[in-house]
Length: 327
Image 1: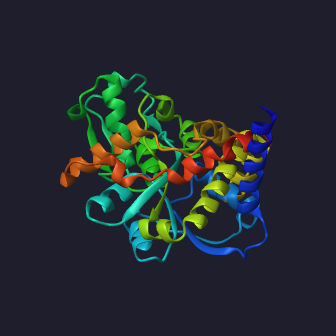
Image 2: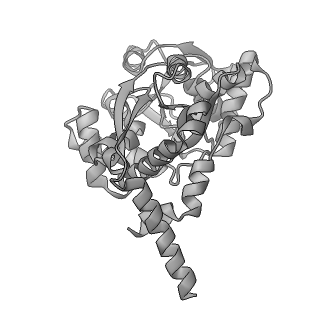
Image 3: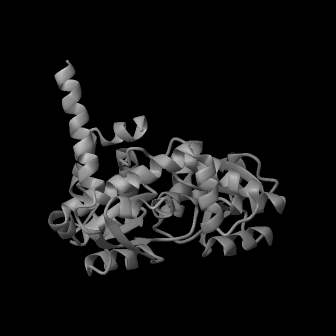
């Protein structure tokens, strides 16, 4: 028994040394993310807690708005890692692009459905105008799945493409919309305007891979060690963010440029418990994303060909995630 115990400790220690040792120079990588919101917390934690150098990585972090542009950057080798929702990698994969999902930090919708004050029950959404960012994305799917869970036909509401979060909040305040999806801290701003938070979609049954890690398949094959270093560091960032409210609030204060302590605390409380550790893909959520992509006429999906979690499997076999918990 003791021999097995010491072998286990030796294996985990060796893994940590290989991932964080100083024998190798830091690897230059480019990491793309899609927007500024609370669900980007793990990436910001990765940077703020200096976990990149710990895992022998030297990052350039770039903001690329739009899933299509983010995937094009991966395919052209301009970026090495892309943090996005699951739908862009699935769409690109169906078109023959060699993009693969290697993990998921968030498998829940980070949105709340905010409505006019008089809409205080899901049934009252019938006949109403609901603003979304765009068709074919996570906003549309979130509304469709929420309606399904409430037993409301999709045809009972009108979805309107209404642009970015700030624009949709203004449209809601001006009564140009009856409802829209908002994330923190805009949800609190909406309440200050007298609007109603009808439901927190992250608390509902519907799953969706809102933040996945995608890479070029060729990069995974050629630089598997670098991918493993990234996923180990990203996993530690997720865990440390989830475990320390003070850390999370401090990070959100900096990156969301928010000074209101109550808003920062509410933002952390709203999102921190929804992250996935280890950062594995929720398969039902992936099916939900696939249905959205297929609805665009892209055919049936063989989901396994778009996901490769062997790096996470390897870290788990080596005891890395349990080591972080005990540490």
